[in-house]
Image 1 (tube, rainbow, N blue to C red):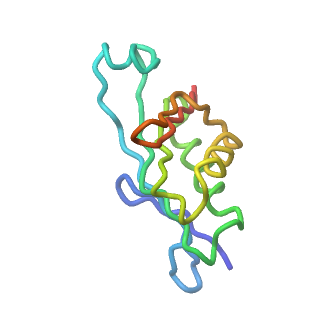
Image 2 (cartoon, rainbow, N blue to C red):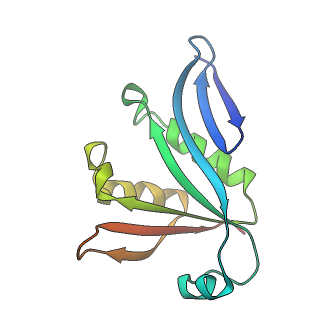
Length: 129
């Protein structure tokens, strides 16, 4: 299987070029933060910030390295920028939150904030400068 790396607007995909099936995809888009919010969150006043969302790998292609490959491609394309994402409990039917946090940490993301009281989520940030 040969894998094509495709970008369509703000979406990136890895596609099997023999079957034209999407193996994994994600959305990455620029975020607009006020100076106040940047400082509150811990981002510097300057520099672009991107939000990574809707990251999905098809069931039968999981744990084969495709998600990591796609994230590394996005890291190359956003060099010099900040990327953040939110890990939350609705993802647990794929992986537990702890497994997801470890996965993103292995790529370079760091835990910025963790909430446990009413909403379960973990904010993670990658300083890709």
